[in-house]
Image 1 (cartoon, helix red, strand yellow):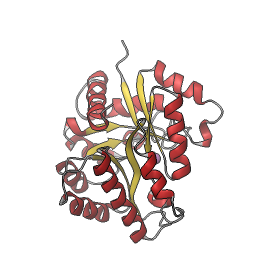
Image 2 (tube, helix red, strand yellow):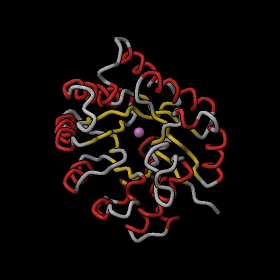
Image 3 (cartoon, rainbow, N blue to C red):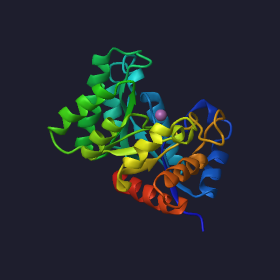
Image 4 (cartoon, rainbow, N blue to C red):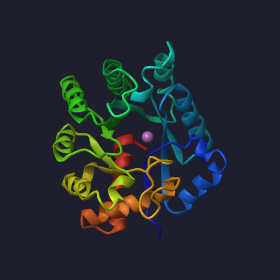
Length: 258
Ligand code: NI
């Protein structure tokens, strides 16, 4: 029997999937991926995510404005996201967070949108998805401040931060989601961090079409390959792949209420 997996973060609306989206989803289903969460980075891609979730029963949507797109968001886009987020096929809000690597939007604007997503998450009772790139201290600062307004429900997506950040996020009740980077040979440090995350707060994702895990590094990533990251995480925690799949799937279902 194939044990179920959930890919908690992928970009199925991406141009890389336009030609063969049916086959990509079929391959995922055939290899035990029971659900994929496709996520938007701006209004247009968030609308696309909802269309995909409407078309495929095994796809759910997450909608929001990613920090690198915060600057170019038009007036009215945020109101449209708030409206879209109430859609029954939408299970979370994001991507949100802070990104000092690309540095395309001023940090103040990114922070403003980050806080809006957390507030929307609270209002709708749907978790938020955090993108954090070279901004760990700043992200933690926002999260800690927001935790003062009540419990947080969310996850750190494609986590590649350090032990301190992981610990703080775990203590704030957030889930930690690992992507293909976990499998890369040189990322011993990341695996050491993954080992410290409590088992009931672990998630797996592909971030497809980006960041394909070993043994497919460098290729177009797709949800069926989430098992490579799950298997790596299993090894890190001294579990079988099936045991880890059961855990990460139960965790995703609990967080997103799917
Ligand atoms: Ni992403």
